[in-house]
Amino acid sequence: DMGGHDTYMHKEVFEQAEAVDRVLRGRIDDRFATVHLGGLNLDAREARSVRRIKILGCGTSYHAGQIGAGLIEELARIPADAEPASEFRYRNPVVDPDTLYVAVSQSGETYDVLAAVQELKRKGARVLGVVNVVGSAIAREADGGTYVHAGPEVCVVSTKCFTNTVVAFALLALHLGRVRDLSVTDGKRIIEGLRKLPAQIEEILKTEPEIKQLAKAYADARSMLFIGRVRGYPVAREASLKLKEVSYIHAEAYPASELKHGPLALIDPSMPTVAIVPDDDLLEKNRAALEEIKARSGRILAVAHQEQEKADHTIVVPKNEDELDPILMGIPLQLFAYHTALALGRDIDKPRNLAKSVTVE
Ligand code: F6R
Image (tube, rainbow, N blue to C red; front, top):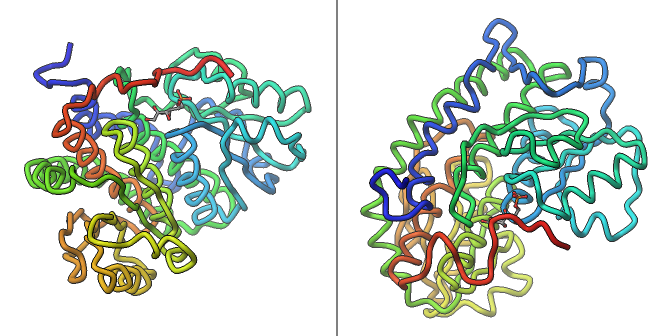
């Protein structure tokens, strides 16, 4: 049942405010400015002894993990990074007893992720799951973890589960931060930001008519560049993946800082750039990148907290706390990918050559 929507993708994009509300519900502890994640199976002493965090997933879940790693470093000051589960399992990884491993998966059945979890457990590592489907294989194999409560996701292309997974990582990061060195003040600031998310998501979704027009304006591109910096880079990567899977337009994500080391050579009027430009301490750096692109006659679509002078178009999104902005900045680009695919007549819920759950190697 699509509840009045033409595709599951559209329905699921529009379910995001409600889904985020669900992942937050019952978990916030205002008294201690922290959150409780019931199934983590990691007591405070253990949480304090974690030296590194390694996040493993595939596709969109890997990108959610990349934002998650950033949140963990910022809020808990634990070194963290994300890696595609398939790469990890084939490179005979060094498994370290002080590292906490986190497996991320919507379906909980992705074979490369499951095999990585099994290999880690065989070597005695502690593995948490950040999973959507309750009781799935990865959820069962993990030592503990948290469900992301996105609800069923039918469209092959992941949208609401991505957003909820990132929010689940924000909760994990806040929890780890508050048993370590994150102050009460910062804990409260993040909690306030989390509470604002559902209403801000609704606000973004209201701009659909404008995004639809933009999508039509860019649908003739053969290829697009997506750029972002630090917090914005994984947002750019995920937005680029969304566009290519659903519209079949080639898209490539790059850190904005790497432009001058190669990709600037691609810029001309036929190669548009989508730029993630949050209003944070890197704003001026990001603006400089827009200038470099404009100087080479590149078209620019910015996602930002205020109109960008150098951009041809800006999608303005509401501002949250700096750390939580990545959660919101990808949402208009889900709609951008959707409307581009619609304009090109693509099979949105079932893009060619893809399956919802990849249970083979
Ligand atoms: C992207 C997409 C895929 C999945 C990937 C992992 O929209 O759907 O990239 O994210 O196959 O799937 P899960 O999260 O089920 O492990």
